[in-house]
Length: 144
Image 1: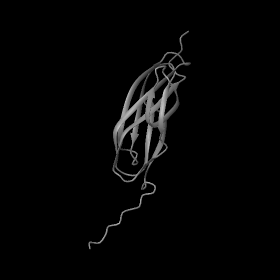
Image 2 (image 1 turned 120 degrees about the vertical axis):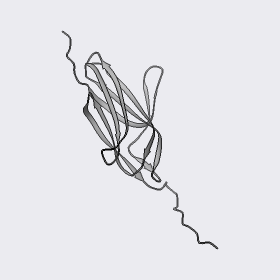
Image 3 (image 1 turned 90 degrees about the horizontal axis):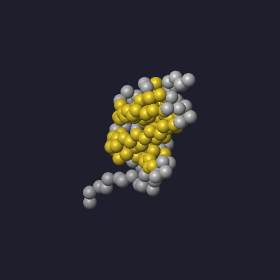
């Protein structure tokens, strides 16, 4: 008897600076991002990567990863990827790379992960504007 189509579980989703894969197939996840601290806005992130691992499903699926602005309606980036799980004991690791992401305002941005239009996870990524440590704010000097 063949298993019916089973929607997979999202085992993990991590926003990070970079993801690399070894020759043996294992992944290096570099710079897991808890929040984004910048000296000013607007600011552009050169690259943001999302590492998603799916498991316990059977069938063909479409993953959607979205990066949403603090107003919770503006879509900054969107990615769609098809994947397949032939057996519930298998897994699929999907990597999404968003390049040149411009952040215009501080606040909570959101990563949304969907499979076949079903929201599996939505998590905040706070963008905080703060001067770099040990940096004194510059004060204008009066002309002599």
